[in-house]
Image (cartoon, rainbow, N blue to C red; front, side, top):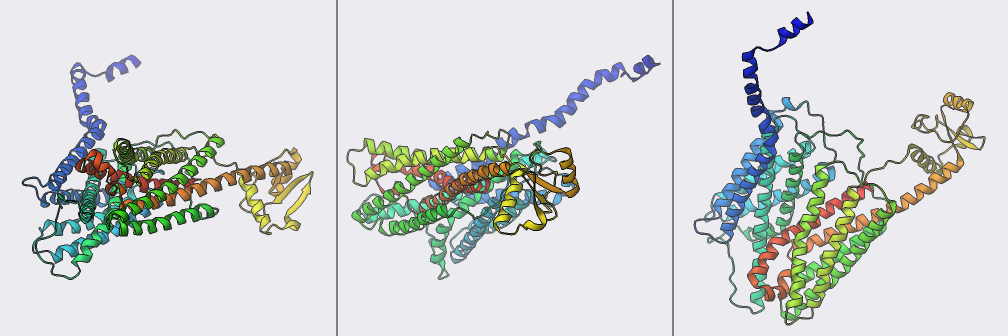
Length: 589
């Protein structure tokens, strides 16, 4: 009977002949797009990115047949497509996403979302300035310059909402469609970032050319984009000047948004290994020294920036004095940052903890961005070093440029190692007994531990009644050797027995650990404020790479300006990304 049943279940020759084709057809339909969606979507993203870059480049060099309407129209189209996709993701497929339970705990940190929200608010102010500027010059500006800030406002509002509530999602449905939608969003933000960088760089270059003309240089062509008509409002000059002061914030907003969207794209279809999430808390405690030193650097940076912008370009002597002041200040700050980073690395080496080797797209992206964006500063610094070596004449301030350029390279080496070392360290939780003991000592220090009802000495051990401490239980903490009768008494009395020698040992260990953590927290706080300080000068017009003139003599004006314009955005982004990473280091320490 069994053999007969087996024969009955075998497929017929016709079915056996058709089944391989059917299986191949089904596999081709269902598996092929899923396996190759990441490659296909990434190629789609690169293509739309390259088209946008070419349109911006053609507009920047005044190519024949290309006007500002063309790149703006392209960006408006990309933003509207992303808005439609985000609306579909949020509303249209909500019922299919109820099964999403997995969340990437490393992605979309709350402090990062708060930072993006802050930059987004300033971006909205920038859009309102652009709308006001268009209204004032509406007679001679194209309609796309009025539509662009409106579309960008809608895009910004919806994207911030999307990142706040969906940046941790691990998508398991509609994976092919979502890959294309997310990679479209990633490269749309990168193009908006590139557009902001291009506009801001052209403005900085024009200011540099104006200073050169003031100093007596001739044969300099200005790239003027001033509208040909008169403004119908009296506040047009305020809008035009305010726009360029807000560009650094919208540039950071788009690059940070693209990184969060990229992590979401990498997490599509990912299977997580369940592990205990250690919550990151920010506590302003024990970081007085690092905070005070960092605030001194920040205050001094603002003062140096103001003096630099006032003095540079006024005359040759004042320009040289401003450059010397900047280099001396930067050398001192970079030396302090190198010292702090080396001390932090030595402390990490002494702890000898293992690294966390689990795969995390967010952590890997943070490390890659640190090293990748540092290449911008390294390129400029090596160019300055080469120019100093090859130049025939050297002004006095040029010799300050040499140690400054070397320190920029070394400081980024050290800081990258410090940040990556902390981000990838395995989190080792303290044993339960030491945590409980710390609670006991903290309560004792506050004189809240009652000795009469809940403290008694039995066989040179301490028994603390659980009625006074309901958050402790025998299952959480049991130290020291005890007899079976003592254990029964402990269970009956619901109490804890701690040997005094173990208490002293744990207290010593905890004190050493807290001392190291305090030092690391002060280092992280100091480096955080220093990176914010070093982000400010290049973002708001203090760029000695333009003004010292030595590199322009060696490499030529146009080649060196091109190098600076390409590398400077990465250098600026490095400081802001380092600041966000150091904030995470502080919270994890």
